[in-house]
Image (cartoon, rainbow, N blue to C red; front, side, top):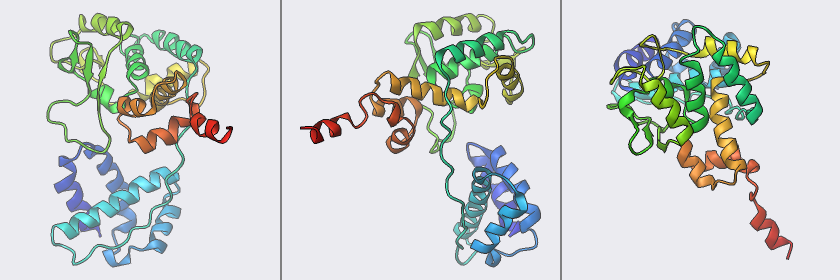
Length: 275
């Protein structure tokens, strides 16, 4: 089993959009599965691994998903005669926390109070709220991807492998465009939009969490900003198909997360039944 994991991490992970995520998962999987063969992988052993790890179902699902992908890759490369079933826990429900506009304003004010992060953290928050993009897409964003003339941001960097986590091209409103132009004057032609003294930022978590604490908010993560953008659009009556396109979601996922916020959700069905 360890050979399948190592081959997958070494040969396939560099070709994916998230090699670091795969590396973390393999590092977590290796100690437990090192003495096991692929034939030992079954529902019972996967559940036992979950008890050994003691992590959330979401984390466990990601790690066992990597195990399944490694086994399938070994089969595809002819190293296994057949794949085996890898049990996964049920997908956890999506987080429902989103920010009201006063809460978003409080978070921005708190971000500006950080001496170290005051130039990049507020801009990160603004981009997330105005575009609904994922944390990784925003941190990867470079200035050539921002079209100031037409007011567009292409969140797909050149050469990025396309994955199920779509990165759309989204329009930029006048308010965000003003902040981007101000930040652009401090940057370089090819540099990262979100940077610390010109250097890219690997993760925003530490500064973001400090701002959340200063704003006296709870259960707020960078992903909350993406969920907030989707919720605000739904509350504003934006067609759910367009919300999904804006966020890079499938229509099914958009309906699952935001339909209940939409003022017209199921209203046509109600009107038929009310006749």
